[in-house]
Length: 437
Image 1: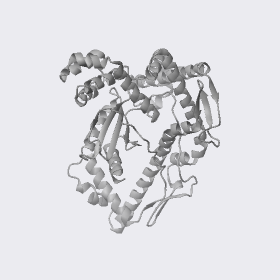
Image 2: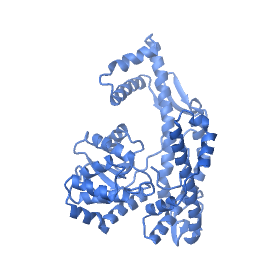
Image 3: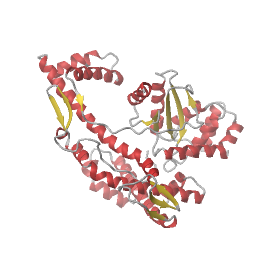
């Protein structure tokens, strides 16, 4: 879920920028950049042209965060609350504006029910209006909190060079590079994933055809023999394991070599702080999840992650840190405070399970009701919930998360490496990689 209003739109790769570059080979097979889909080729070849503008946009994003944080402090609220309040001032779209978009996009919306068409268009227009309002406010505040340009972020920089000064506070090239490394990596990794998926699909298809031809059978019969006939419980995990085993067999037989290079994954030092945790303190793997209890993706990911961690008894320490997205979830900050109050009575896990299951009912009355349901002392819960120290603990998590370039939830780190795909397979692979290292 989005946190700030600037979005990095960057398509980039770290390898092969010419159509005849070879990306992978196998016995009797060569895959070049020109063999990939036109969209992927375009993303790869346009990398260099898009990196520069993206770096400039990220500097603007860094400045906006400094300015909005300064204004929020001046108003005595968190930055998330400040942005949420500003968004609340924005008027929704009129019927005429809604119908104009619907009428202009009939081909794309033809299969969507009328009520859902309207809901999607309203959400789209409201987001546009909010972004426009925040952009205009940003321009106004740049004058209040004086912004002085420094050295060009796309030029040659020393770590101590100043790239911009905001509100009399300089931002050095090192601070800037630390800030941009994650979004630049994410953009590169997204395209790299697209490239590798296409390479894998092409190799699998072509090698399976070659194997079928060698056995004098058709490809469907080969897949039946090697994959579908081996299903027992017909689960997604079983399907993946069987298909992966067959793919590995083909790759080994036909000597597959992948020449395409993925971008190097940045490893960050992520503090667990003193937040709720399970698993041994000395466990070799630390999993840290920044979560919002009103976030549906968090509610979906949390049990999957816990189930995977259970596959590695005694080897993983799991920590949950708060990252309430106040810009879109009105009760998220209070829910985080309530979870901390429950933690003070030793029932954090039980309490957040209830929060994840009741994301539409997290007003203060409901939060107190949930505390009673799990037998918490009401007086102590209320005291801890309203304590300035509890609010400060949540803000500490927010500040730390922002310093790690967290801008959505859930954001999950395994030994300092951010996990891009929120699936059991991705969680399991990340933990296994961490254990190997």
